[in-house]
Length: 129
Image (cartoon, rainbow, N blue to C red; front, side):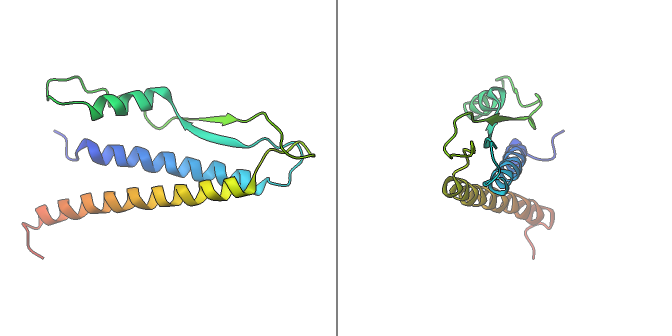
């Protein structure tokens, strides 16, 4: 028996992705002046994108559920191009923009997850405050 819906699991995977993206982006910002440093970026694995697309199109309870595959793996890709005279390719403006975008994404997921738990709490209490 499932206690939580699959939407809570999806939100959890999104939070894991966002945390990894924050870690990598912060690392890029910290190394903005390091000679020959190549920026890294986080990309969800193909399997994750495929599974989320499949579960989003699930229209019947008899359809197969592919959500049991490992979901916390994210690939980290290193860019090769150099934009600076010292061999560094970190653009601080782009990194700060990505950090802000990721922060908005993270807080949106936290807000949705909080709403799910508030709904569960309301059900447990029987609709009483």
